[in-house]
Image (cartoon, rainbow, N blue to C red; front, top):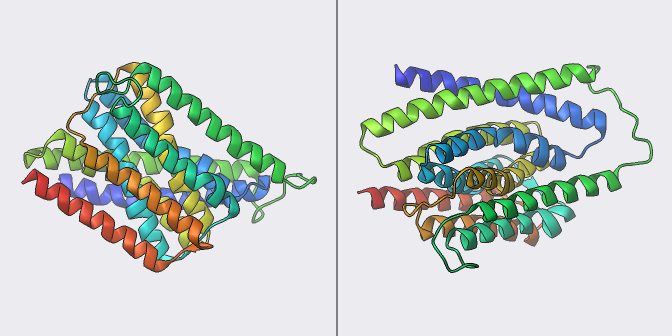
Amino acid sequence: MEYLILIISLLAIAFGADRFVDGSVAIARRLKISDFVIGAVVVGFGTSFPELLVSLKGAISGNADVAIGNVVGSNIFNVLGILGVTAMLFPIATSRENIRRDAPFCFGVSVLLVLLAFDFFTKGETLISGIDGVVLLAIFAFFLWITLRKESQDLPVDTQVQPSNGKPLWYSVTVAIMGLSVLILGCHFFVEKAVVIARNLGVSDAYISITLIACGTSLPELAASVAAALKKNTQMALGNVIGSNIFNITLILGTSSLIRPLRSPDIVLTDYLVMTGAALLLMIFATTKVRISRFEGLLMVLAFVAYNIWLISMQG
């Protein structure tokens, strides 16, 4: 029965992602918002909602392995898995803002998380405290401000709302909300059943959180990015990954650590370094050329496979 629910959940995720991207693109066209910003802010925040729910649940129940492992694993999967697969399908064009602001910002918050997790600043107990959470939430607010401020400066003088494919704005909003709802619901049942299966096999919480839960809660990002790429909106796919990674660290861990300080000794330095290395790889690929090529996407996927082989070997 669990396997049947997994299959149905995957179908729901694919359908919901397609509707969510369609609605988001239509809204962006009507309001003259760039594909990257709609991907980073609207799609990125929407697809990060499952990670938020899972990490908050982990923090409330005192299971920091789930709260932190979910974010670390999701960020690794987002870059190496999702962006890698997307780039292999369609090379991802990069903009000047991606090179100068977005990719470096994503790398910067990844480094900051490592420093906070190992108390580089306080030299105290290894945890992410409530004070750290306030700092992370302030950075989240700053990212939103600079992203939306730059977008408003780039808007033309004539910002009158324009029709998109003949559909009214309320229709596009309804489609996006419906798609996101189906996406999150499908994700919930997928993660729930995947964890049941894993625990029946005797797998640890830390491993489950950084692999099954992380990849499961990132399925909306995968589905939305691939759907956007298939519709030739590669900037939206890139924005989705970068926005989701920044939201995961700043908003999700920031909020979770306010509920309860997060300590997770089972999420080791190697996991954090792989997450940071993935963000560095993204920054390098985004800044050295005008696009992330299929070959670079293949390198990302191979790095993700190598990391998972290491994880499996550590379980043995």
